[in-house]
Length: 174
Image (cartoon, rainbow, N blue to C red; front, side):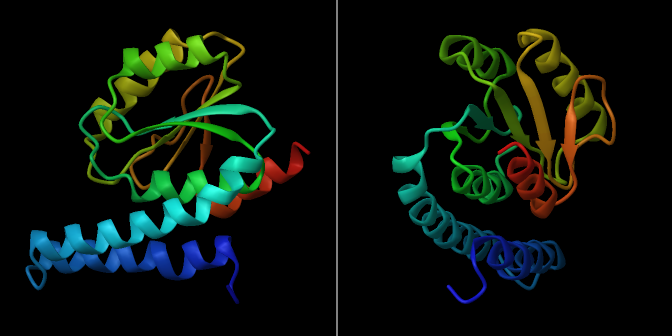
């Protein structure tokens, strides 16, 4: 509460998950520990987002990760930021096929699709998937990406290197 949602996610939640991931890779934590930490944080972030979801009157945004990306911590944190700015979220979650993300965007007439890409995703596969999604979306639909595995630059894609950058972008649209 003292930090506020953005600072909490940057200083605490994001850092916690990075450290848990490093400890898992280093062998000091096991899969069960990583899954438990992720479940706790995920539940908390969903609770934080819920009141904002009920009041949302802003642009509709589909949020997802790419096929094969099961890490939704970054997506949940970005979703809190978007919800705080009044975005009406269509939360598809982790590991969603490109054609399903595009179909949801067309059916719901969304203003943007937001993807979180974890650092665990192979860069070439990620770049191809992002390009395929951009091609499948209506031209007027923005495509936002962020996360440790987000490609640097692609035509028609707006990349956010931090949650703060996303927060500032959404604040500027008001």
